[in-house]
Image (cartoon, rainbow, N blue to C red):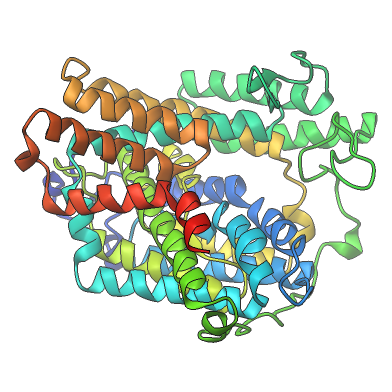
Length: 487
C-alpha cells in the first residue's frame, strides 16, 4: 500500500487535465482509481451514522416532551453529510468527509434539548457554527492551529489512531465496558463467545494479512468480505440485534446484516426537519447564562476536534508540510464551520470532520475527489437506506483498527527523551481513547505543555494564543463545577 510522505510544498507541477490540476491528483501521487476506492472505503466506515444519529436524537425528548422523527432524521443526516462532504472536496480539496458528530449529538439530545425545544437547541448549534466561521474568516482559528508545536500535532494524530482502534474494538464487541475494575474486558465475561465477534476477528485478521501483502484495496475488500461473511452467519445462526425490547448481548451491535426485500431497497426521503430551528428563543427560555455555557461547550468541542482530525488525516496521507499543517487549512476549517451550522439548520446536530476519513486515505485517497465519491454515496443513502443498513459495525470496525495501527506509526517521530514535549504528547495520546474524546486529549496536552514550560521558566516559548487555549481548556474541564455554582 503506497503512502506518500513528501511535504505538499515539494510536489512537482501538475501537467494533466483541468480536473487533475484542480484537485492535484497527479501532484499528490494519486490516481482516479485510488480516489474512488478511498471514497468508497470512507463511506462504508462512516455509513453507520445514517442509522446511529437518528437513534440517538430520536431517543430523547425536549422541554415540551417532543421527539424527533427517526425517519426524517435519517434522511436529513444523509443529506447534510453528502452536501458538506462534497463541499469539502470542492473547496478544501482535502480527503476529509463530514457528518453529524458523535458526542456532540448526545450533548444536544440529553443536555441541551430537555431545557428548551428541539428548534431552540438546533438554533444554538447553528449559532456555534456561525461563530466558528467568523473565527476562520478573521484568521484566528488558523492562527490557533499554527500555534500548536509540531510534535504535539504529531501526538494528536497518534492519539486519534489509538482512539480509532479502541472505537473499532468497542463497536465490534471485542471489548466491553464494565462498572468497576477493570474498566474494559475481553468480549463477554472475558470470553469471545458470540458470532458477531467471530465475524469481526476473522475479518480483521484477513484485512491485516492483505495489508501485509500490500494488496490494493485491502481495507475496502476487508469491509465487503466481512459483510458477506456476516450475512451468511446471520442467515444460518439468526443472531439478531443486541438492542430492542429484549436486549441480547450476543447480537449484532447496530445493523443486522441481512439482505432487504427487493421491493424495500428504495425509500423516499423525509426532509420535513430542514429549517426547523430557532436562533433566539433558547436564550429567553433557558436563560442567557445556560445558553452561553452550552454554546461554549459546543464551540470548544467542534473547534479542536476538527483540528485534531485534520492533522491525523493529513499525517496519514503525507499531506502535511514541515510545520504539520495541511494545504488549504483556512478553506478546510471554513467548510467544517459551515457544516456545523448546516447541521443545526437541518435539525441533525453539528456536522464535523470524521476521523474515519483516514480509512479512505489509507486506501490511497489524497484529494477532494474521494469526497465527491463519499458525498454522492451519502446522497444515495437517502434513497437506499435499507442497503446502507446491511454493513454491520463488526465489518466496518475492521477498518478502524487497521487505520489505527497505520496512524500510530508516527509515534516514532516524537522526541521521548525531551520530557517537556514527551509528557504532554503522552497525555494527549492516552487521554483521547481513555475518555473517548479528541478534545479532552488535546486539552490535556496543551495544558500540560504550557504548565511545564512555565515551571521551567520557558513561558516565552509558548505562543500567546496557546496560553489562551490552555486557559479555555481549564474552563472547559471545570465546566461541571462552574455550571453547579452558576446555576
